Amino acid sequence: MPNQDEVKGKLEQAKGKVKQGVGELTGDQRLKDEGAADEVAGDVREKVGTAKRKVGEAVEDLGERIKR
Image (cartoon, rainbow, N blue to C red):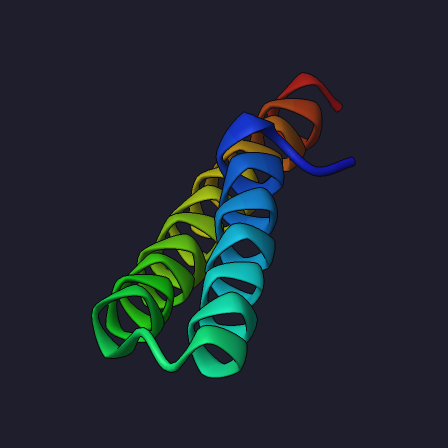
């Protein structure tokens, strides 16, 4: 199950794509660039969230193995 960072990262990516689209339609290069930056930031945030989740899962698995 995705954690908050993963979800927020996906939302940030979507927001960035929308900004890029609006910037493209309106000819606003600043908005396109801002959207691209948002998309990259969202991607990074999602990957950090995924890494956190995987570490947490590994720790839980290790705990279960120790209990056995």
